[in-house]
Image (cartoon, rainbow, N blue to C red; front, side):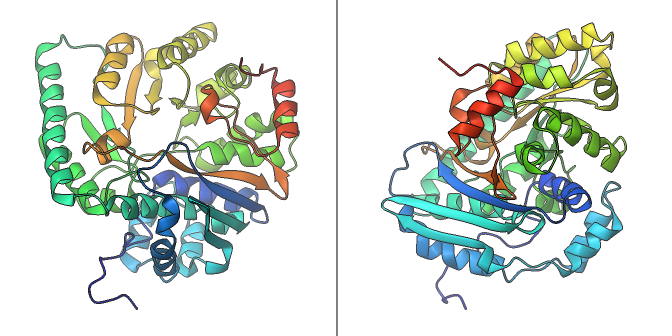
Length: 404
């Protein structure tokens, strides 16, 4: 039971996660329901105070999360998404997080979080726990001053886009952006205020959110397809390692039959991805998502690949989602908008741009069925693997040189 003076729980609904958690969850349920997985938390930058101080509050938040179930109206909403299947909705109807699958402790000044258990159960912890850590962390700062600064910066973004759409010559494809900021948001209340404001002020350019709960409540389009963990899981699920990307993409096509057609490219790096992304997949998928490496170089590689395959890139979409802010998104739009459809998923710079240093925190898949898995990012700092022998083998198989 919460104390009378305690703030409300960070998470108020099991819909309060990213759409791609549901889409990957359903795909894994239908392909590898028996898989066991391990996920681990990491903070990539230095916080203003030790994250270990959050342990007690985080334990209470996780206890609250494990008491939640899906409500009937939430299941009805998910059922209304045409790519969600009845058996998956039936699973959600009885789903409840199991507290034994997640452990939290202090390791010196650092926060250690380990999630371990059946993948179709534990994969859903990630977004909730990251949102908890962020909101608990920022509760110790001056809330009123932060919100005031956040509103000022949000107004600047809106003014920038209005000026851009009014003064710049129209391009072949429109500028569209969406919110990817749930996991690193300042708070749930601020996240809702930002999205409500963008919905009302920029209805032609703001196109949706990855946050399924706010999509439902605010009448926005829920957006998302797959994340790194989906393709990584295929490195340890009995598929030949060299074929794991193709196997993951093929299973996605069979699961969604034309829906959710944006493929993530940087689990092994863009070059290795394009080697597997042949004419078959290029025709079946609507486009590609960038999440590491130089975005212009990545986009030019994608366009050259479509040209090589004799596919009109104007029928495809490139989605950029790596540490974007509005000026960077507009610069990329100017560069590519006459050649391909575009989308821009902006995260921290929408949901946590309040003048405070932000956390760069992640929870990443480390093992499946006892075997290591890896992410070989186009940005070396994002490469993730706890087993250097496996990482070296993966580089060898896909001919990815080690960074200098």
